[in-house]
Image (spheres, rainbow, N blue to C red):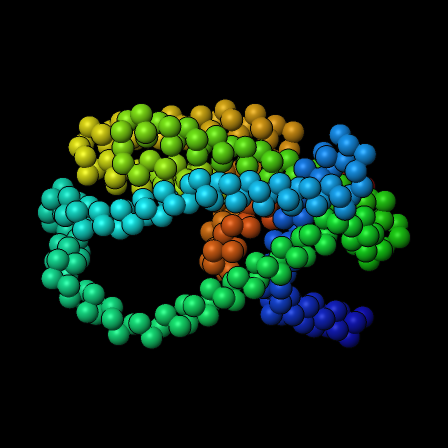
Length: 335
């Protein structure tokens, strides 16, 4: 018994080490699952409304995504690039304004002086050789994204076969339960993705319109950042507010107050009204659990881990409720 226990412990340690070495592969695989579910939601809806088979429906969904992306890119991308350039030109003035508000902060004064004298740029010039490493990392990330997208398309094209593969790797007595569990995870993840996409779109449009009405510069860029960071709850909306506040600071303190009130209204409306309404039929994530997952996966895996933390928590929460609570804890009877 002791030898068997020791062998089992060593096998568990080896499995954990193997999974850690393959963490990026598993991250790409889970990202592909998330994208596959995102593609499966409109594909399944289209199949219910039309007599199309899965391949044709998925092709129409991908074509619609490409057309919408191309249209939005041509419509918004040039203005976004212009506003990014304008914001970079406003950074010295912003640092000067912050230095005037906080005159005792030596870091801001030194940074402003270095920007004005050009010494900071001279120090950054020797780092130009490191741009090759950054370019290599960007190319690697592009390959990983393309691989993730390819895996997602293959999964969305034939989800039943992949589901059967997972069920076949499950003990026979638990296969029916695994089939139900996979369905629950898919429904929860699909509902979460749909709800967050609608929520992010509403935040983007309302923030853009509100800042434009307040005549705050770079309204489109600020609205886009606020909308995208909606997918990173707890941390994202607060961080996104810093951009419109910084731009408003260049106008007047009164404008800062107006922007802050606008963002508080929109952020609380999204967090307490819109998101709960959209996600009322899916999992309800506790803010503490979401924040800890983001911090943990962000520290372990960087930005990809931070972006995939919430979808992973959605799946794990369903799995814990169905397996740990119902199948283990609820049936645990010592008598």
